[in-house]
Length: 498
Image 1: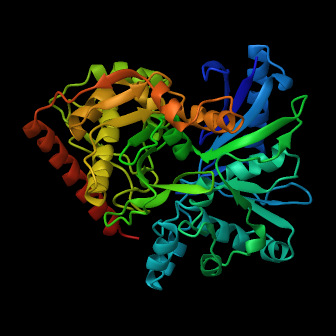
Image 2: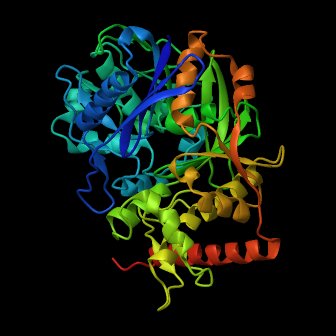
């Protein structure tokens, strides 16, 4: 038997997933790791705890399936994007914790650069907006706030990477320091049109270029690992949202997918065209294969599944996330609670790093059931925001359906409301593990074990489709209340007394 191992390193857990020669899922192992919140708006991970979770799940998934390293023909890596790790290449030790993509500590750095009129320069080269979400300001902060970090960096003793790069370095035992084009495109240091690290951007953020990794195609030879008993080549790499785009077979311009994990991220394939957004969408790289780059418009929602985690861990309304649907089923629909889940700022299309969450419409009849329903519905409202903005930027063709994946895609209440409020069919695939499938396909297609793009797209199949059941008048009424809630929340943030 021949297998492909997908490493799916996410924001709250790491998973190892084995796929067989037919791209069928054979076995899964998952391990959560701690989240650290040292200050308000700060989010950190311990890189060694991430590495331990990855190494452990890889070994476990092989043991569960009765598979040895010699049976695995290739590895694909997908990862939480933008999260920053800096480590000493001689000792392998990181300079403190990883700063997670959700972290907002560098909001003031981004605001200062905006005041200097540099946002247009950054946007032109990277397709991104000046926001602490991306890696560059986080990396600058690490270099400024770790002992002797800048001296060590200048002398060539430090390495920078997003999580994919760090894992690759660990898997290859320090032999390979590389990333792929999709992850590089999210650092805010990479020129997406000319496909190279930008000297101008590195100067703006005061980043020594010698700490940056080599950038490769998504399907490429990334080295080998011998940590599992035999040598296994690492042949695929993509950031989690781009990997899901591949796993959803969104290979044609105009196709769109949305992944509902910790956050929600929608990518619209724009082909070889770099579409500059006028509606605060991101222009990014969807994937790079055979040296050819395919671009996308992306809308980033910071909090989707994380809101359900908040119900569990913060409010203690549920004991496990899968209880949310049952709780929401008991909600009084006449309450019509609106939850703006700006728990770590708010992303597209508003981009307010200082915004905080709010719940509107509470009465004495409001219970945990109404709060649960509003939490699930918030994903639909935010998705309508994104698709509306994308449609305004992408006038080539109408967006007629949405492919979904991620943990929240399993929620029938959430997906039906999604279709209702957006007004288009929502398609959930048979294989929900599209992120892992995407990088497994990269590795397998590199080896010619898996089919090419055309044949892979033919094999994609729907598990369940959701169609709009809400009439236009009701849909618009619901959405107007959401827009009012958003406006009120943003106004509160703007007028907050320090």
